[in-house]
Image (cartoon, rainbow, N blue to C red; front, side):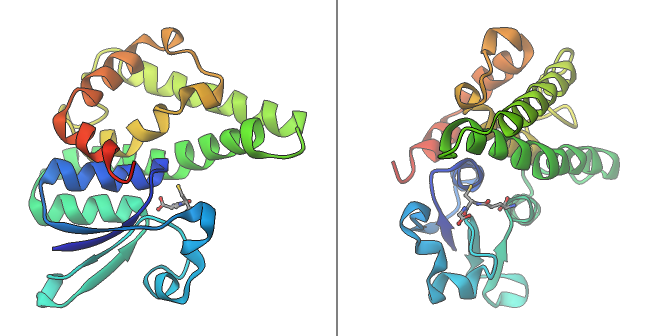
Amino acid sequence: MYDVYTWTTSNGKKVNIMIEELGVEYELHGIQIGKGDQFTPEFTAINPNQKIPAIVDRDGPGGAPYTLFESGAILMYMGEKHGRFFPQDMAARYEVMQWLMFQMGGIGPIFGQAHHFRRAAKEKVPYGIERYTKETRRLWGVLDARLADKEWMAAGEYTIADIAIYPWCLRYEWQGIGLDEFPNVKRWMDAIGARPGVRRGLALLT
Ligand SMILES: N[C@@H](CCC(=O)N[C@@H](CS)C(=O)NCC(=O)O)C(=O)O
């Protein structure tokens, strides 16, 4: 049984999809970041970094409750605990971790800055818009090249690497990206979007 502290943003969606794909039991706690729920003392005790997502596994290692934040760590934990979407074989596992880290260290921060400078920033800063739009487009190119001869991002199967990257791609319009320009990513997104667990995950809290 998990307590899941999340919202409908890209990082939140990763965990929303994962819990529905796994079919685990959970209690959902909507943390409305636009209203400042992430700054309450109760949530800060769960994630001192005051960001969603976070989880508490009521049956953690040793049978004790186990608290975890950072979406990549949560996906690895759940994938390992339930033996799904995170292969055991060392070479396959590190390939998955490689693309997961690529998402956490590249796609997340860069796409996030593109969203900020292109949409949220009150002042339109041409340097910020150009810098993050250009790098976002480059990262889309990396994804498209990777998927040119592969069905999934890593290890020849649907994994937490796909689950981590997909929600960020859903915001392509915010990034000034046309899906027709990246046909391999589009095909991969269509395949992920057709999964019932993904559909259920994306519907949470909406
Ligand atoms: N690296 C973190 C990033 C988490 C993050 O940036 N979450 C955003 C929503 S997608 C958030 O909670 N923002 C609220 C804030 O910054 O105050 C992760 O992947 O979990």
